[in-house]
Amino acid sequence: MEANENTIKLYYNTEVEKLAMPEYGRNVLKMVEQMKAIEDRTKRSEQARAIVKVMETLNPQVHQQENFDHKLWDHLYMIAGYDLDIDAPYPAPVPEFVNSRPEKIPLNTRPIKARHYGRNIESIIDLIASEPEGDVKTAMIRSLAIYMRQQYLIWNKDTVADETIFADIERLSGGRVKVPEGLELSKIDANANYSRPGMNLGFNRGGGNGGGKKQWINYKKQGKKK
Image 1 (cartoon, helix red, strand yellow):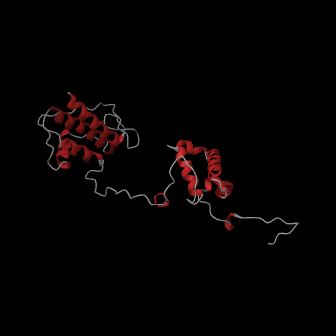
Image 2 (cartoon, rainbow, N blue to C red):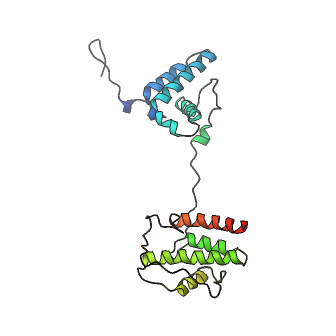
Image 3 (tube, rainbow, N blue to C red):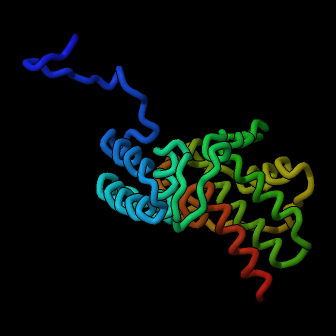
């Protein structure tokens, strides 16, 4: 639609260039374009610092990030299309690095041998298998058996014999861990209530399978200090 003295031409976002950083809006882009047109490098750098202050005001959540000031200057370069000749407190970001895709994290597709115990149990068993024979290893096996008994009872609301847990340890370890003869577990409290995953159950109430693994590492360190 042609504009005349009695009409105003409207601009729609679908008709203009797509913003590299939409969270700062199109007005910041216009400020950057005007800043780039300044011939004097010193004045251009001063204007850049002023724009960064405006960006910080428009995007206050950036303060929640580490090195937020550095990130704001990176965003300024991105808005300018990386074509910016100024005196900045940080080096200009490299487009190839910013636009690169993150490396894929390989997933552990190895099947879990016993789902009711969880995958981390296998890691704990590997840790125990590498421990030299002695009192520390026996104590670790006993604590592992107590934890596995708790996990077993989460999914099987019944009783379980100690020998069943001991057999599972030896089976899951592939024979690398042998439960010492005469090993006994503490009695189960009649009022014990074992929760399903997500209810903060862990090794010695440490917070789930992940917490259990951390406790094993701490336990091993403490055992070596004795």
